[in-house]
Length: 389
Length: 237
Image (cartoon, rainbow over the protein chains, first blue to last red):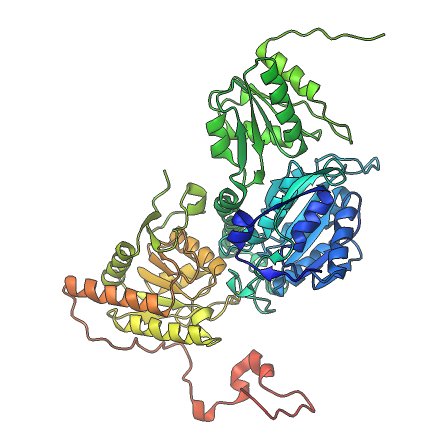
């Protein structure tokens, strides 16, 4: 293990030299954890997350992480993360599909407890029927927890988002957890080029005294909330406390946006801002959308891309601005419910122009041709479908 | 266009200023009614409020009430020096964040779970929050804006608070003393005559008799002071 020296977070994230490696998404996430000065990692294995936490276990064995263990199941893992973070540690965990849902009750309590943990979400089908295939329907369950939700397109995003998340989540005006989501297998088990910060540099350690709530103390909420909760008293004041507390979590979520601009270059990426038709996508679908825009350019069609990096806070203002003159908005997704299309529709005044799809799920890949069909449809171009007999 | 953060009552369940586009100030700047301004401008407006509105009160939180490090002790001294310069200023502490049931004594302390009770009971129309953890300060400031007409000022050691009428960031002992100097200058400009003196004793707090203090006076915290059975403490800090 190389000796790691602590460097300033801004230097590491924005200025440090980078080395190009050809690695999987799971490796990229573990490499980010290696550079994040993590104190404790806890998880329960579930495919396709297992690859990430296996590699994190390796870097614990090499001495990069102080403590690492396998919990009894996901609820225990996520509860233990809360305990570790309230005790002052910097913590990391990862999960997938049904595992996320099993741990969700604990995860959903993290923002209210002001727990700045980082959670890798390597998406997969939610059972039943039993499947381990990629599908990102589980992200829809995270959207209203209060946590920051980032959606990575590729291995590079996985590295950058994960490393930056530790710093963003620990900003005193944010101090809520961040989920770094990406599609299982398509990203976690596939290789891509990643420009990584030097292995011998790491983030400064977490300073728990910067927390907007006191460090662990059994006499104050949220620990105290269990036995003498203000919300358990039936009077107007008690309700107001809970209401204001909820507001505070979402205000913290909004405050994360300025750091998303600083460390991730903003919540969206736009290609061809003057286009008449836009593909709006996140995660792996953004990669396919990018390819569709390239196809369209080759065919002389005026098509643009909005890649959404941050799902929470959702970049409503930015999306509204970019799409203000769009004739059609195509939202390809890797899930059946179309959570991103709903978000986009809710954010813009001209929601009739949103075409919810194409959608693939259950492990199906998203061929660029499906997006092209929607583009032709939006532009009124008729293409013959040939059947090879 | 961000909202203007003005004294309340804002109503039943007011929208947080952060939802309405108010952003925390960068280092060296401050918030005044939700707008980013120079520190001096914000300090002058805060001073004016504390000097002219009814029953000015300082609410010190655990980060200055408990002498947990040298910085906290120095900051507490600076808060006291500030209070001495504000005519008829009172200090009502926020010692912790526990819900106080069955009922808080609004003269003895302020609690983030029902800050408006203390404000309304004492008819406080200008107050300063200092040494309160940011999460709890935000809860309190918003509830005060909801139900009272109090002008709130946050002297924050971190990044500030959108829901205060005046929010100064990175405030430690030196910065609080600078605020005191600005306040004295504004007081003179307003022609208010005042000799610096300590705030009145809080009548609801029990007298501290150090000569007769026993472990039992620490109530539920006494277990922290009493050695365990068989434990022999030979050294202390």
